[in-house]
Image 1 (cartoon, rainbow, N blue to C red):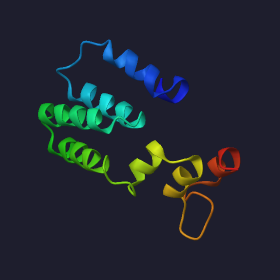
Image 2 (spheres, helix red, strand yellow; image 1 turned 30 degrees about the vertical axis):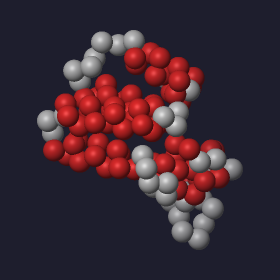
Image 3 (tube, helix red, strand yellow; image 1 turned 90 degrees about the vertical axis):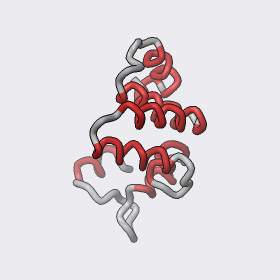
Image 4 (cartoon, one colour; image 1 turned 135 degrees about the vertical axis):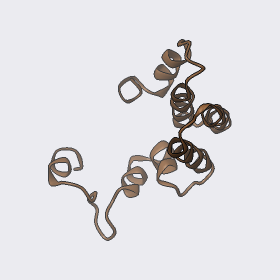
Length: 111
């Protein structure tokens, strides 16, 4: 939903769900809030997700995502807030203007 209609539309749908007891609910909200530049709200949502998660690997992932909210140079921050050129740079191979993955995606989508 967020990729098609935007993070605000997706957040509206997510907020209408009664899933507050699932850590995934809070993690999704955190991501959407972050995409909207609402980092303080995103941090609270990450805190709720971290408090509800029982898996240590997921906890580590969520804790890192929360820390990256305030790290302007992190790939996540570049994806959320930067212009396309900056977002592209987060996934570009050093010394190249192309991403480091297969040619099919480069040819069709990376012009």
